[in-house]
Length: 223
Length: 246
Image 1 (tube, helix red, strand yellow):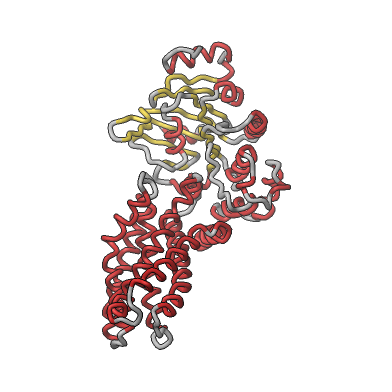
Image 2 (cartoon, one colour; image 1 turned 90 degrees about the vertical axis):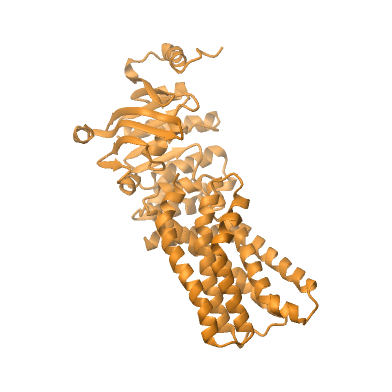
């Protein structure tokens, strides 16, 4: 099964390397939002400082939606999803591979966006980099876990670009909340205990929805 | 009934298969048996249920009721085992346009766990006449070349059963003739083949047996050798309704 998951990963990464459809739109969107918010607030203001974690996560989440929308559209448009479904592999292997690809792409975008955010909003990330990366890792896992499942659901609907965020956001609120609050705690140099409290919510969400997604993906991807 | 069929050289056994979408019947109690190595062509107009039948037999869709057995495996409980034994060719090629021909075959070969994949790709890509274009991206291929590569994709794991869903759609004369030539070779290779099409001429030419599906029901089932091609067209239009188009 691992070899088959690796085959799907290899195929998606190679396709993206050739087309750059997902990553380029995600990166350009993130940069535009960063620039716009940089001009929207007075430099160094208290309002900006308080809003930075929210801006950061809204940027990441909206950018990831662009990528998640493409995740299965790419397969469906050319009928390739049927080719994938005809292969003798468990449906859960397809889900795991797709989630991993989405996770990798979103992480890559975050690694580009984060330093730019630090420059634009005058953030010192060095001191709290480990904690921030942990928050990013866990929250991005949540984005990929639930986003991949909903992307598979929405891809067969007529207005799939609209359906994905409509389905995704209400379910995703615990992770958004946990990510913003833990990032705020990190920027305000609060204790690890406070940060860990929020991280636990994100971890619980990740685990629960991973189990739900693995159990339901077969039914989602079939009829 | 199905178990005894499998023991008597029956490769595909379909019994009372039905599929509904809401209140609409796509298939109504479809039953047929196909002996190993035979080529069955199922004709039918648009909306007759041909693609639904292929989708069910290839495990992409679950039947609402009825049974089907492919080889020694039952649907839908042994879907993964069935998928290992079938190759599907449709009008959609299932190919990734931004990957090369070689990369597409490598990807599908890995999914099917093909052993000695390099040698298999080498052999199958030469067989479909794309050896010189194997390093080119699929998006640079003509429709006919894409269909040839789709054949290689479907055959990469050397399947025992072949399902063809309107394989001639969108092909020009040359590509259609190439596909026909390849299907004739398939006939002689003892693979059990089921093709659904509305191309009467080509479908008849290939088949050992011919059936007509209309409104989700098998309304005709006969050996090809017992059919007069000239009168078949007239009979087909009478059976599917509306008479022969002028």
